[in-house]
Length: 390
Image (cartoon, rainbow, N blue to C red; front, top):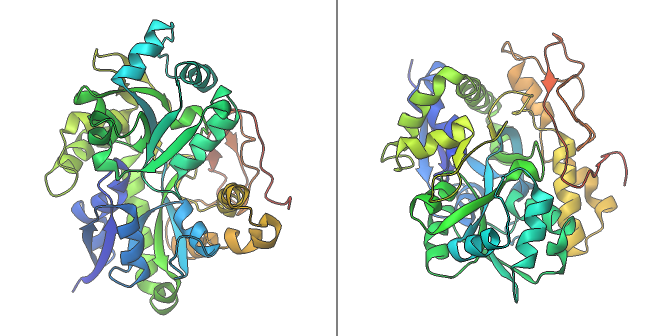
């Protein structure tokens, strides 16, 4: 069978794994595809390559398609988020100078209490903090917003600065930023370079945050529905393979290769296993569900996730959420996901929206085969987002 080549943009992060694995381990080939994976230097490059037709699909920060639908960011192309590539996977870290001040005041770096970490960081912040994030429209920014609003960090002057993930450790070393929020392996790289320490995982702020999506231009999705379905199924099966514990060693070795992330496999394994080394002194912490590719219906693009992101963005930009909520929610194409997965063994949730922040423990939900169990999904401050409310 002659393979169809599809250009797909990505950023070198552990959560690009479903695309890399789909190509390297034959999940794409089984669907008659060859993924031409194009590494980008920044998230703005990924967005622009997709928007202007350089690639047909992309590994994209989940808030970017929502921001584009709201007319923000200066790029007007209509983009769909057709599946969630990964859930969670972010870390918040600080410079060695801040780490020293935090330890001197007795902060234990226990890595599980975001409220205590926020209070401690606020106490040592001095005149303010400059925090690096990969992109203005990112889950990193949203997690920082939730964290700050729920802790004494609300009273600290915080300057958010955009830094591409692979450059985050160097920005910390150069003193351009005091702290960062970034996806792995770039937080662990800062630890290994002895320039930073990890303070909390993103899961301590939102336990089940949609991090990256598989995005396509709406025009391409409309004209190439069969190619889109083949791409979605290959990525879905790669994510399911990644969720298996016995896949981790192979996945870490694969992603570590020069053509992909070009970092030691040991650093990648930390994210895949949830066993993170949080400081240059070697402290290790174990984080449940640190990075999810499949379990808990992780790949399903819930419209409520898009609406939550939209409300966050609207609150910062003074946009009318009630007027934009349906447009924003439609960006996450649960209908296309259902259509593509209908030819697989995937069991899908019966609903396309849920109340975000309301699941305190694993919960079975209605589905065709009765096998869908959602993972814990709570916010640091106990907030609840009901997508039916305007």
